[in-house]
Image (tube, rainbow, N blue to C red; front, side, top):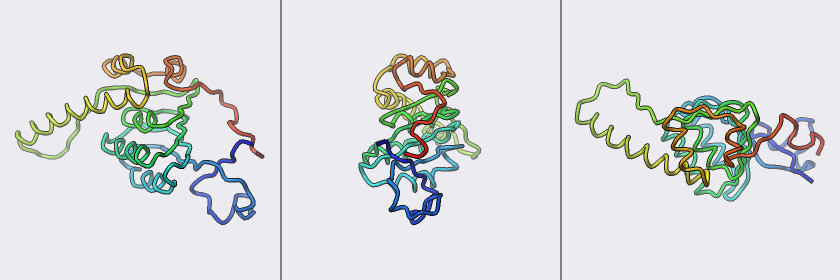
Length: 196
């Protein structure tokens, strides 16, 4: 029997229909990765830490990206804790949000999913000296190179294709990602029966 999905926002002691949760079969935790990763990093970190090491979750992505450091922190938590995640792109999954998606063991996209691959962008609103700017530039180049290599490793294939997409600032559809063998294409039908 397929698992019944549960959301973190659902109290553990009561289900949506008012029955004690112990009377229902539990499934993987569901996590919404929506909006900027930087703005939501604390909440996403807390939710990932709420999963037992080696546990399962389903992550729903509709994110334009955010800080590469926030992305790497989420990837590190997922990998170091052995979290077996299924990532589903329900809308957009772009920029830094690509790394947590790639860290998912199973990746699902719809024909309407959109993913933007691009080189990292540096933005600072701080007034910094020339030496600090030069050091940041050096660090940023190393970080970008290392993260691009990691993205290929997380996806498990397509290194040359990913590099081309990044270099050309490519918007990739769910169909294209699936055709490249980096995700599974699904239709907009229920993944599990509602009354499983």
